[in-house]
Length: 248
Image 1 (tube, rainbow, N blue to C red):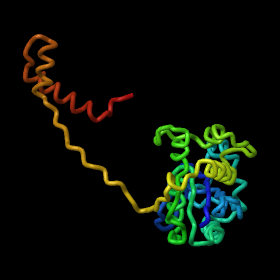
Image 2: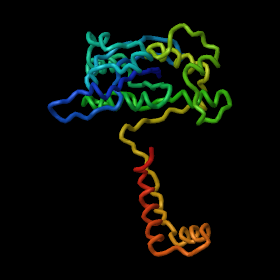
Image 3: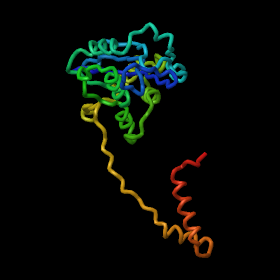
Image 4: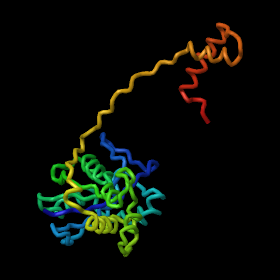
């Protein structure tokens, strides 16, 4: 068994979205950096992976992403595009007996989404993963839904801060260090990821407005019966208000 602890940096800049000659399934967040550590079964680091990616969908790095990650549009101009980096990442993963480790499920989702957007083979990716973030909350006896940020978890576990955050390789390193401290085989089972899974939301029964009681409330407030014109106006105003078109 080996573990691939990986992290991604994304970009989304709508004004620079490129137009393609043929229909292309757009990924909402485009990966611009993949950082990963390969750990053996004793959690020793075997190898690291760090690649920047030239954007395909968005022509510019958004100012927010540039400030957060220090990654610039100019920096990525000389980098390879996602398909080439993806193939190198698959080579880096290597063994089929592999478990992904991530800090938050979004990295799993976006890795598969980006691969599908570029029409690449997602069957080459490990499907089983451990999301370390909620288990870190349990480690501190917090509710599993009270998710900690990576920076806060590093601080709470007294992990030395050797590198700046919001860099895929650095964040993968911190995730691996957290993993080593909180991992419990009985508490952290691997989960199989299905990129095509869509949760079925139970249909909510439609609620009907009881206009009779609504009119009665108006009549109680004004201490008189509403005229047919007033009743019609109240109903119309209520229906128009539900559209939220007059909110400012």
